[in-house]
Length: 183
Image 1 (cartoon, rainbow, N blue to C red):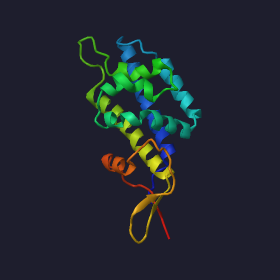
Image 2: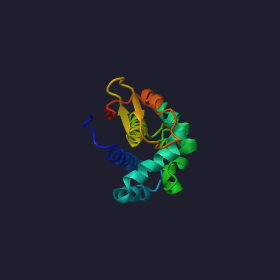
Image 3: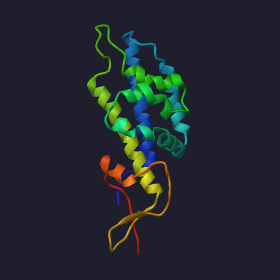
Image 4: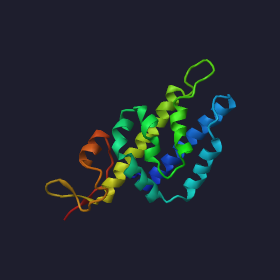
């Protein structure tokens, strides 16, 4: 059994961390006069997240982001360009475009404002959202391992649009999955 907090807790914490990074980057870019991205909107989302239902938050992410998980896994920046609005449909479009804009803001010298390290932090957080979602789906399907055969099966059909869950678990290199043992 894993000592990790439940997926819903980890997911919400990672969304908050992502919002915090964006807020910091936008604040820094504004101080340098490089962007007019609305920092207040991002900060309001951070505040709203406190009261947002964790299950609803992860459900929306799974539903709307699933088609783009491979782009997230490969850190394909076209993901932000083409699909960011689709995976966060309950957010205001201006807010969602923050990601796209952060990846394109340039310094006065013409260099990208966001450093490779900051980009990597953002990608790691998006990757973590997918991984935690996979953990959540796995647990929602109530996995059981047969004590004799050691074969895992699921007792429930949850998130049916997420096909080939065992393959996705392997592709994303998930560990510490929780199982119940059958009699």
